[in-house]
Amino acid sequence: MTVTARDATRHAWLDYAWRIASAPMAGDSHIPACEASGGAPPIPGLTAADCATRLPGFIGERYEAGKGVLLVGVVFKTAETADPAFLPAVSAGATWARAGRSAASDAKFFAETRDAYTNAMPGWPVWKRFGAVLHALGLDLGDVAYTNAAKCWHTWRGYDDRNLAKNLASKCSSKFSRISSLVECIEPRQVYLAGASAAASVRRSAKRDMFVVNVVNGAVDGMEPWPNWLTEARGRYLGLTREEPAG
Ligand SMILES: [Zn+2]
Image (tube, rainbow, N blue to C red):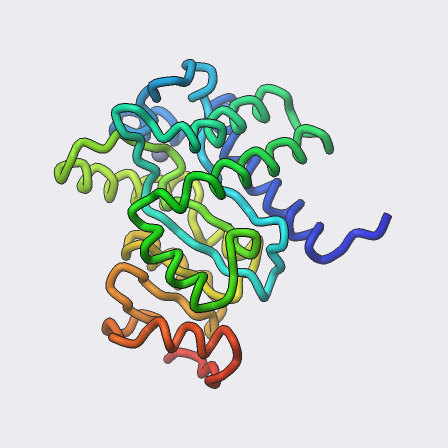
């Protein structure tokens, strides 16, 4: 069987995802700190065993290094009754961590997380931004990888929790798994961030010509927000405008 570049990228992503999904079972030192900060509370509809995992995100079946894009959220927020379309993404990680690595368990985790995110993401508030980006680029969720800055989650209880989200995003991305390690692992062509929390980590690792956008305010490559950033993003993705190394 020939191993394609796409297979190699998917395997690299699975190695990355395993370190995150299995971290609670492995006694990762970040886990107690993350829970003390309000991360990973119980999720209605899931057992404690289901919730004994963290969320690496997903990778689409057509994602290719140098071509696919990476979408980065801040922290997954569960409502009082969590989105039923998303619950399988949490239990998939716990099941995978208990089963251990094998070709079959890896394939099951890949498919279950892809399906759960693909079903749930169009219902998320941030989809207004990410959906617009993918539409402009002519891509769909099969072409992208997604992760949150925080690999734990928290419950959504209004404005105060935004500070909690920022705190978790900063703790998780700096101490647990930096976004930069994912960028190095799957080499996206462009990175779209839902906010500024992971921007520093991405820019530290990104190749100098990687196009990085904050989709909340349209700040491109660390510059001031651009009113026409979506047009610029599309132009650069399709090669309609030249990509000048920043700085
Ligand atoms: Zn955490």
